[in-house]
Length: 258
Image (cartoon, rainbow, N blue to C red; front, side, top):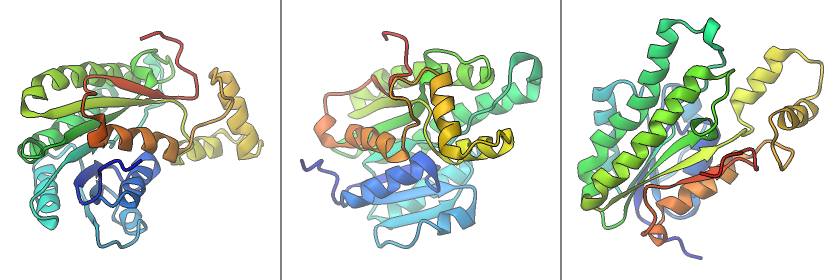
């Protein structure tokens, strides 16, 4: 099926690794133009060169830098912008008693700035598109809190709520807003946690034990490209009647019915 993404332009934040990088590659494979940013110039450089790819270093918490990045992205591809993937972020492994005021402040700032700054910068361009779409990359933590990730769980819930509000607010401008809520995905964060755990288990065995402990029905961690598929599908003009919803890509770890 042709997803209708060819020659359209999409911005993906946090595209230097993991789900963001998989999304960048999936969009390029569909013939789209892609602009992506990250804080690490070396990691961005490892994406490689492509005539339909624009990259720049940028911290999504810096509103002015995000505006400059989005404007440069649109200019690189003829002033057009058809979609935005808000992917930049990280998880904070802490329980309540280990969490400081700065932890709370930093986590909420990152999560909300990571959505609002790119959206505000891109809104005028998205409003000019005939198929504008925003996808906020979230987590099932938004629906079922994890005590070991208390700040991240709270911030994720707020972003899910915000996404629903944005879908209503921006519908009149022809801008769809949806969320993809991921579970345990095999990215750099988990390889780093495996190393820090020093369990003595090979990574595949450690990963299987982790999936069992967290109740993942499919018994494994997800792959970044599996999440990217859902993101790209929601960006597609073929999803033109889908807004204000969320898709769980979590291997069955979600225990809620909403």
